[in-house]
Image (cartoon, rainbow, N blue to C red):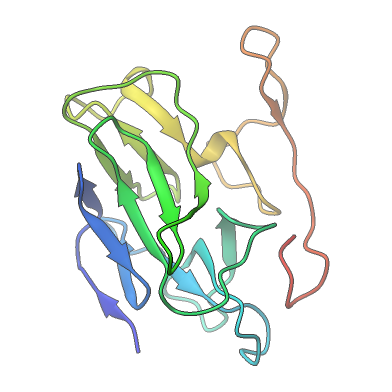
Length: 168
């Protein structure tokens, strides 16, 4: 059973536990923990999926190569503005890699399906410290870029899942 927070934003040192989700302001996307495929897998991933479709198609996965083995996962926004995914022993399984920091970070799931960390002073792309659209999985959403950014060196590309039960 999921507990929907009915918010699209978390602030510094706030968390999302397995079983809790964020929902974009217009209700199109949801972020939380899931087990892929048939649901028989015990592996848990942090992802974003379409909220109001029968299939709940996953569009982004944070820890594609490093699944959690139980439901003790925790997503936290640090006071420097880094998203960290922790396992049951509080080991870091995945983190966002922002090189910029702020004193008042907010993580927000946008209606576009983009999970962003910003400085709390606005929603324009210039205030984003990190965004999931820079690290696509297997789905291209409106507003994502594709190809090589010669200025930043980011290479935006899609990569398929190994199978319906394994997003690696």
